[in-house]
Length: 106
Image (cartoon, rainbow, N blue to C red; front, side):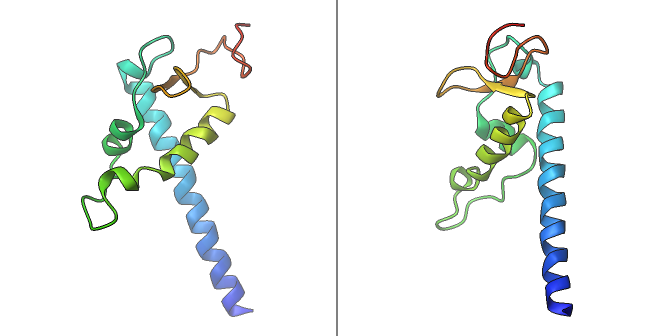
């Protein structure tokens, strides 16, 4: 039982880190001129680095490899209706409050 409790604690702590990471990225985007609704948006790597998620260069764990987990973070923010991708393969920006999740104007 002790081991299961301890493992649950790690999972809970990881969940808290994910929540804090999402909040940090969202806050960063709210303060970035490029990320405002209707603006050109920002690519993931500058967001990733500006939020302090870059651990530096390591063999088989380069900075560009490290940023892949932020894709899931951005997809969660997108599902929450907070951000949008400018184009299918483009940069990200804040979603306009008048834009529905389907992408049509309200």
